[in-house]
Image (cartoon, rainbow, N blue to C red; front, side, top):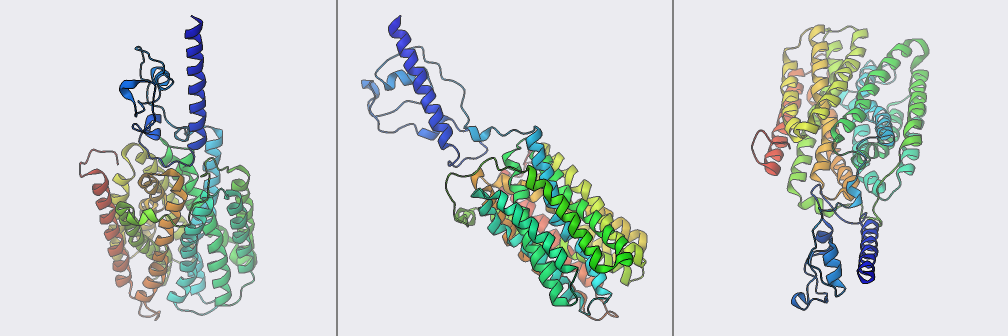
Length: 492
């Protein structure tokens, strides 16, 4: 009896030591959504001698008491294999106060990144009136396009920085740049000053904040990831509602300068939330390269990114010009034209939460492709819009379906990333490449529209956006079929 007790005591100590070793080394290991047992991690056929002559030169599967006794020269006949053991990194909270606080922080980051981008249509309309400077529609669109480009492109840098554990630094610097950018915009007088303040300063600040807003959530959620990202992404819609209304209601009372300062103060107050509550839960034990070269051989990943590029081109056409379209053609008065963008973003609030909540049951790839196709069809429908009611209804409906372009891509990219320790790099790289669409969508559609106010080519502009968006939907559907087959009733 004492000998048996000693054997079991040794077994427990060995098991505890091995479990601790696995817990310490898990963070640096690659992993995917599939289950991984301890025996998979250590290997089945390492050439380590054991005390069993019949099994000399191999290590039997580790994880049972009998196996451990065999490895130390003891034999047993009643070993029972346990259930597969998951590494600790698989144990995401999937809820709880701390996890939902990260969603609140993400909401605030979206509010001040994509919320700013969604607001630019109002600034475009204001700048078109020539009260600050006189420039063509295409040149004015470059301001918003540079801002959008930098929000996405800087993500290619902020993603790896996030993976290295510098979340706090990204939040602090990004928050400062956005607030500072609005304060500088309030004293701008010329076109190039606006480009530097609104395009570059606010754009770089947004780029530092955007990737942490989405890369942090997959480390806190799995089953509810779609809902969590959707709720956070709804912040961009709320920013696109509140900021334009604040700007319009104040511009005639206190002027452009103080109107933009008020927006800057709102940004400062709301950005305190993520700086106080967001915490990085997982980071790799060593620094990774800025570029994950394995992504360039991942064909579904590359095809998805290309589909997102074409989709964002069409998205920018509507975001930049739907408000101006109604006013310049006399369909909406000056007052209503400033509310078209908030109406679009109000529809987008539901478009970024409802589809994401549904995606937890159906899978994100089953929704993003059809959603993109509907957006493309709606852009073509703009050809038939000839009234204020048509502009308002189209803005609301398009806002709902356009939510797939903001809320679902991060969920899809997370699903396409096997190694979750690279999720910041992969998402950052993806949006860095997608940033090229900002340089095509806004200025490209402005060039198609034309510079002569008396001869604007609206038909060509809407066709330009519609073709790109429908092509995007086709590519998303192709990725869905490539990764999971063509069966309809499959969660993908």
